[in-house]
Image (cartoon, rainbow, N blue to C red; front, side):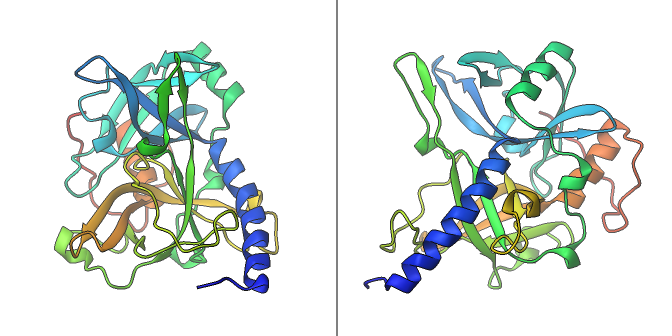
Length: 279
């Protein structure tokens, strides 16, 4: 179906505003790499940088770094950098989170020069403040290439609406702790107005889901708030239906409070003890 000039103009406006938001989000989003069993350097997943009480953290999904916490790298200035610090992760069956507290001062300085650590002001913890304008940003493995002695990452962003056809109870999930987004169907973009499928999103896990607020009217770089961490893509109906499971920011912050003894208020919505697992 041909796209009308009016629709294309709107797409271009949205793309420009979302591009501003995405550029700001990527300042706080990293990609993990590791050396696999064949000693090949490959993309592992995505993560988000945060600072709380003057301490510095990297948040991701537990399954992203499971079994690789001693072999996890980022690339800074063209160099591989092994992250130094203490990992803590949940059992990924229900709550799928892993957090690293960085411990090397010089490494933190290097990361600060290349990225921006989110503060508590950049997070949204209350569901009723969400606008539902969700933007996912991460690094799918299929879009990241390693060749010529270098790594060539290509981030991907996707707008997605909250799903209303997913039964959280079937996966033992709670609405207060989890958000489900609909990634089914075709998408269009200003650069490609023909309806097309999203790429394989493997590797976007651990990246952030952002509520972009009123991004069309206000500064999209300031409007964005971290709403959760992407934890899983669920396919059903022989792959025809795709949903993205998201662990809400309130759970992430409460887990960090418990795991790292942070002196911040306990969550008023997440009451349970978040169980730690093996990294």
